[in-house]
Image (cartoon, rainbow, N blue to C red; front, side, top):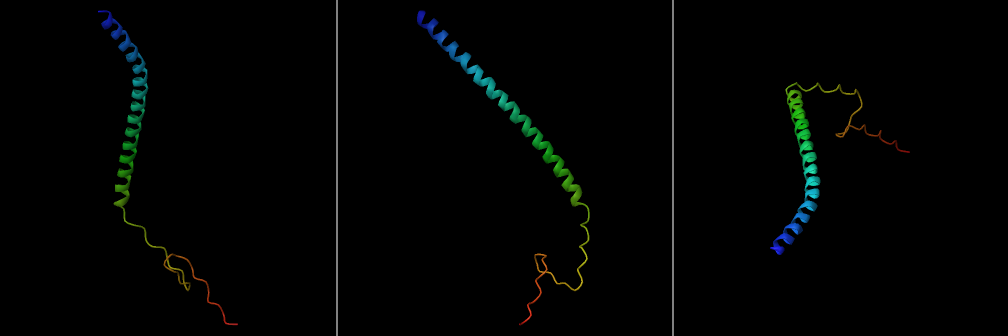
Length: 84
């Protein structure tokens, strides 16, 4: 009987120590769960606004600059060098 009593006290000590750790981990789980809920809400809002924006027609292209050719990346090429 004495062995059972000592074992029970020994296990109770471990249980008390582990409860502190488990409470801390559970608090982290709650914080992470709240963060996921916030992210899903933000994702849903962004998805809803993207669908609305996708249904609008695209804006017209900007007018072309007269007399100045542009390269594919939008930069104006340097003028040709004059022979010296």
